[in-house]
Length: 348
Image 1 (cartoon, rainbow, N blue to C red):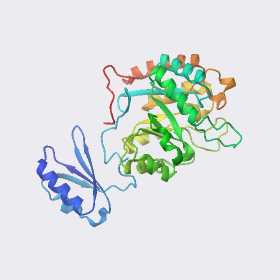
Image 2 (cartoon, one colour):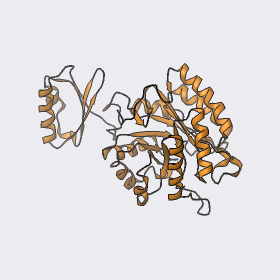
Image 3 (cartoon, one colour):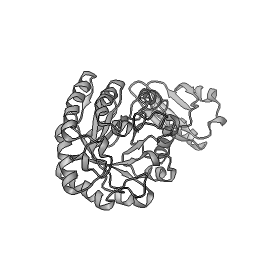
Image 4 (spheres, rainbow, N blue to C red):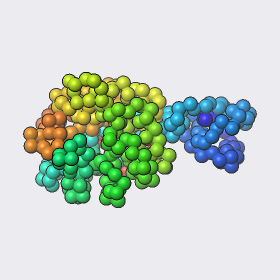
């Protein structure tokens, strides 16, 4: 249930209503927008009579929220959420690009790629230290050493780092990671999501390969219900009957999510297609359809990559695409990369 307050509602009356609702066992979620202030109620609202709440002179209206996700719901939070990582902002009016190799392989490799993608305009560095692989015989990542090398690349370039967590046992190793990625296979690892909800760190939540949009938003709700509202959604393609590409990018998910939720949404064209030549057209489509950014795989020597080399761009290819994406973002009126005068901060 959401309670829409009248403009300029007296603070003491709002506080009195809030105290009453908390006394009845509800958790409250405030959202103060440019034109509307909303109180979202989380709990068993069936025992509440909307007409009783609407009778308060500070209340403009009362609405039931039928969707099972609350904190991630745009009805609870009409204004777009912006998530700030270092000097980069994800959300309304901004467009960010995260880039780097599928796996961290050596210090020379990750630093070289980091310097190249930064020069091309990427604002965050991705790289896998822990790798979920379908085959137990495939390269599983450098693990703790991989995290150390990512931090070395961060010191060298200043780029915040994005890397994937596999399970709760390694959470303590991610203290210096800027954005924790939850991969498609872990999207419904609810124990992990609950703990990430306590961290306060930005979470990049990838869509499960067979998950509906509602299931995806419910996973975001697990994180947000723990107190961490710094969630960025990532569409990375779903599994269908089509075999021409690695996955089927659900491009329609972006405007659907923008309608249902206030959270930033980015696209992963590398995993969605598995084809480097498709990264450019998908990236252009991402800008046009309203996505808030991209996460792209870039490797300095894709032919010798230990993981997903076939879908990775070279730094030169990435640079060419970035020039075009920058043009598209400007045409759409988006701030590409770091805005001038941007400051380090938390999510708004």
